[in-house]
Picture 1 (cartoon, helix red, strand yellow):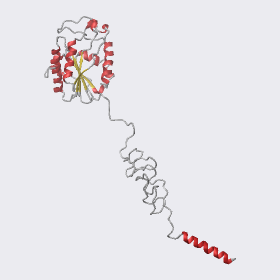
Picture 2: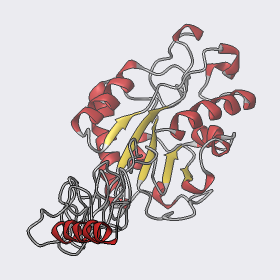
Picture 3: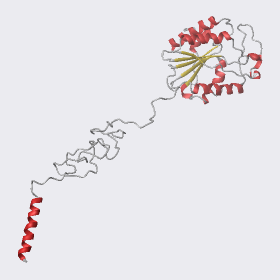
Picture 4: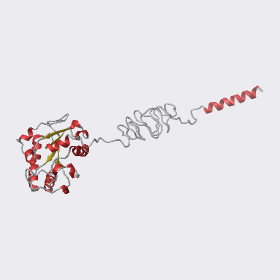
Length: 306
């Protein structure tokens, strides 16, 4: 009985010794210290199964990560790299796109508002000051608008570089750049001109003088006087006393010609109009107080976005 038991024990030891011999095939390890991955990155270790130091596997080892490899600061599935946002990001990954500097989808651009002038100076006459002081600056930013308006400041007066009208004080000064405006809104008015060329010649001189006075200017907007409907009355004959709310076509054409010749510097603003004839006493160039307030809102709304 003992002999049979001893024989069985010896047989079992022989089997165990054979199984542990160097001639038996090794079982594959599952990832080592430098294990590779199917999409290994250079981030933190993923949940791979660690093996011996000499093993290799499709699963990631200490320097890999599972699935889409993580970058320098990423880990796990679809991990971001150093500041990136990519599905396969990784600053050191063998299978991922570089993650540094990534941007969110639909990120906003660097644009700003269209009207970004630091100081816009309105140049004109008393009739200009009436709508400017009628509430215009309750619509546009008060800090970026100012006024230089003179009695009888007609087109030909502002065209003279050494003329007295340029000494007119500025009111409601801009918070910054008051003496060096980067935009000018120029009101062109004259009662005697009968041809487009007269308008074009003097308004061109106005533009030249504005640029000489304000080298800082980037844009000049041209406006005619405020106007009524042509059906409000009969256009008077041209002359120094022919003040009227009806604007002649030659004035519009002259301003358009100046702007067409200098498109990068000059543009013509809207033809602001109050068609209620009762708002124009004696059909002259001055609106009633309430009408000027309404016109100030209309003009301000335009320049708020232009």
